[in-house]
Length: 403
Ligand SMILES: C[S@@+](CC[C@H](N)C(=O)[O-])C[C@H]1O[C@@H](n2cnc3c(N)ncnc32)[C@H](O)[C@@H]1O
Image (tube, rainbow, N blue to C red):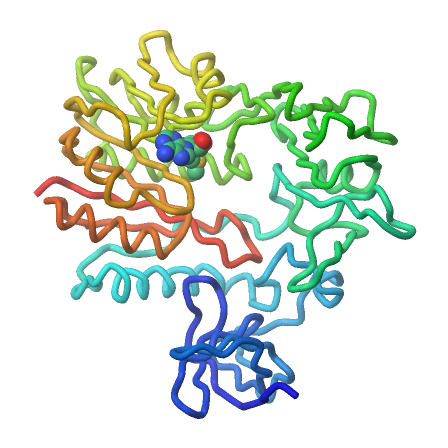
């Protein structure tokens, strides 16, 4: 029988789990808890310095705790891990996690001197225009799309999904798949275009609407979405932000980070758009500067060629291998692992006077912030973005200025 103990939850960690204490003093990470909860916990995994546990009972509930609004959470759906937290508390909790990452991981001593706050909140439900789903292989729901269950080898097929955009939720409910293990739904909510991407050339779809684009990994197609007044081509193999209103907000924040005085650059200045994807930032925040884009995915780079002005210089390669040249400003939006030492050195070698860093993981944000500050930049402004409401996912936009 696994050990059970009681603890108070003090705060939330970078992965979104509550942090309590095992009776022997080890840190205890407990998913599905809120700061202020007192819970009894079953130990799932015990390590030398910490334990991971599951809530057996909430003995005393935090004021930030609510009954999960989605019925599929009780079935174990792994799609959203923060449905038990009040939506109006989530923004502040994200700020607390980022502050903690700066202190513990980034080793910043004077975090209070940094202007760190939540960006204006986004709708917590009905937002996801891209959803990656698993296909149920057995039983009455065979062929339907769902989500992986938490810590179980099964799929939960939702009747409706609270976080999916209604157009995606409708496709998830109506489409049936054969021969696919995973499918990705993507809609252009501002253009009305809809797409599903199948994971195998043998896979087939039935019962979907007639205008639905069906792409395979070997048969790419594209749709369009509008962000910040620009129209973007997005191919089935390309990354795009999970919601256009969130992308609008990211554009606004990156623009503010790069041009805090609101002044336009001169046309001979260069904006580096590192990890540029289909050109979201290069197309929207350059303010007349010439864009150099660096992006490793061929699919995204081909889209960027269509989405960016002809004057943009695009390099389809890993940013770590880009040959740096002097630029006036830079935006860098790496994948979850962050820049790391190699890419941070390349970025610094381009000598931008300011850098807008877009991070999708608080831990890698803390590490990258330390690298940039040690390389001669100061961190003065940080905004957390509720891009993925009801989940512990945190997007961070920050501004670094050369000292
Ligand atoms: C978080 S996305 C951001 C894309 C874009 N800035 C946007 O907001 O739509 C990260 C992008 O980096 C690209 N990428 C991943 N690793 C890379 C690397 N080592 N060098 C360059 N690009 C990379 C991915 O293909 C993806 O398009």
